[in-house]
Structure formats: structure tokens, C-alpha cells
Length: 182
Image 1: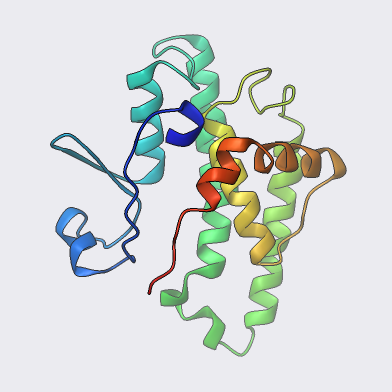
Image 2: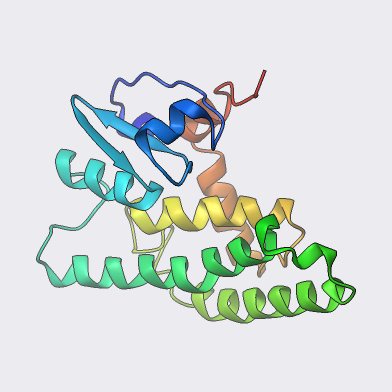
């Protein structure tokens, strides 16, 4: 998002659950944003903070447009992200169960059902209409995660939407950041 905003930043790759990450977030989860002395954890909190701070890629706080944007963002988190998270979270031990293929198929069906409904909510080239906004970052990330996890791809329009996000120059630049655990 910082790349898309054209703001300067320093990126440091630190693996989740590392000692350094746990100094800032006891759960060991990344990403973490350090802005001056403030530490912000959780990708959605970070994006909301940045969008609000720089008055871009979001509707104005307190507006009905913002309420609609937040509703879509929360829906993506609840119905798309949460299904992907539960299906892939190794700490749940699901992959060790004899019936894991059936469980995983159910996650995929739930994801597809939720995505089918959500696709109908796309209001233009971007989720909220003509401008790139927070829900696009969340849904674009989830679409990549779903692809890697071999979840349903969505309809043709959704494929074009995701492609439009992933071919943006800022996305291409950010995707080249070194994320290896070397």
C-alpha cells in the first residue's frame, strides 16, 4: 500500500514468530508497521491507519461511503480471509485428520459460495467503484492466497479484476521485495 501511495518506506524482512517480531507483537504475526515511535500490528489496521493518515484510498471517516467501504472490508475478512485462514492454519491439525480432503472440500465450497456473492458487489474497475481502496488490497491479497491454496478462481470478471490489481506498477514493485528467510 505504501508503494501504491508513493510514500517512502523501509522494508525489512523478518520471519513471523521470530524473536524480533515478538518484541513488537506477542502473537508473532506479521506485518508490523513502525511509524516514528508507534507500532501497529495487523495488516488491516495498518492499511486503515495509512489510508486515514494520508487521506487516500479510503472514504472519509464518518461518511456513509466509509460505512459501506468498512462493511465490504469486514465482509471480505469474515467470508473470504477467514475461510482461507482456517483451511491453511497448520496449528489446527486438520491436515492430520483422515477426512481432511472432505474438510478442505467444504472450505473450498464455502469460499466459492462467499466469493460468488461478493463478486456481484464489485461496483466498477475496483471494489468500491472507480478508485482503488482498502477492500481491493484485502481482496487482492486473498485472491493470491486462494490461488496458491488451489481454491476456486471465481468468474471471468473476478479474474480480470484480480489481474488489474496484480498488473499495477506498485504491486509489481512491492512483489519484488526480498521475502526469503535466508
